Image (tube, rainbow, N blue to C red):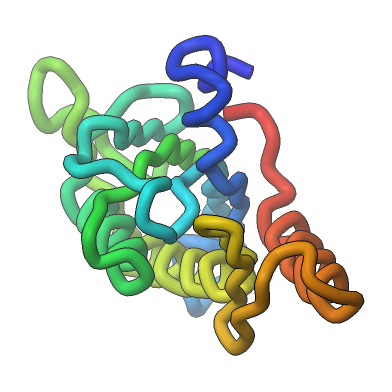
Amino acid sequence: DTITLLYGSQFSKSLLPFEFNGTTATTTTTAPKFRVYGYISKPVVGCGRSSGDRQFLFINKRPVDVMKITKTINECYRSYNRKQSPAAVVVIEIDTSAYDVNLVPDKRQVLLHAEALLCDTLRDGFADLFGNAVQSVGGVTRNNTTTTAAGGGAGDGAAAGAGDGGAAAGAGAGGG
């Protein structure tokens, strides 16, 4: 995995894979579809970063800067971890007719024609991902509704297994 090679296995273990799908319009079935996938820090203190120095956004394999997308990602993450910023690799696959790269010569800034719908999809997707994720911190396994000591009893294994399956089901992505 490229992330592990660049930043190490400890960093890689702090990431959750994700994948979200949607369309660029709410009224037609012929609107271009998009796929967003990648990796983001687990929403617990110690897994995030003190700054946004490891946030990478790509559209159709092109590195880009889209401030509203980045802001949406950070806001979602901070609703679960107020003290840190997420490390994130976010890849958006979308039809080329749904965005314009000819804004500045370096083509890093793009105009997404359905930016609001994409932000809504990210908000909903990350809320589901973070809400279902089981997080381990200092030997304590937490879910949104239950806090149990890791390895304590029969109920603990069931809670960990249920959370792991939820994260995997919402993630489905590979290749970041």
